[in-house]
Length: 297
Image 1 (cartoon, one colour):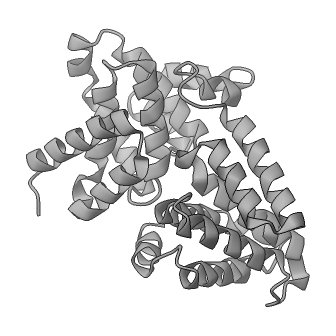
Image 2 (image 1 turned 45 degrees about the vertical axis):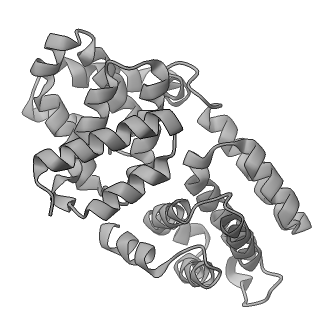
């Protein structure tokens, strides 16, 4: 097992490569391969602290990386502990980076909007450290009108379109695919969307739409929306358009939504298990990733 200093060096190297290539899956793979779960909070602290003296593009990529790392391989507690380590080291950071408090406040707010951190983290931190200006800044950002849309642009234009727009494009793409069942056309649209960091959301939305369409009448028929969605993601993975890591992440996120989804689609848990099995059989969800998802969920 690596020592903490060795782990930090490897993470720093991976971050530099990520800021050049924007390949979040490679970072996820690297963190998993190091097998140093006890050090996972350091990934959060290291990623944000090293980005503070970079530009808006790197900070936007860092925010996106956190969503790709959560909840696998970095679990909820890893994220919370990582931000706690970061906040506790703030006095050292401001010596070299005077704007560190402002930027970390923005990172906190963005993490809440991206569902990487629970809102309770801010209130708990306020209770334990009353008057913390960084937390107060984050709360202020989240209290603004249209805060979600504002936080999507917190680092400026970044290198992609707003999340809300991406979600609309995804829904339209998925609905059209379920009508036509044309794999090549759907794949072309996914490529043109050019958002590999957000493919977990594509899967999450696709499976949810399929569940709602099949509902209580779902059957193991090839014509069902769920089967069609499994065929789509198998096709996307086999053609190297969507990565296996993004598929695993999307399924993991869906698992967390089950209590709410069951209200609209009582059969949702069984349908998700069926989709997961079809995804594995289709070659887009290796057993190792599924096991890791269950451990970290």
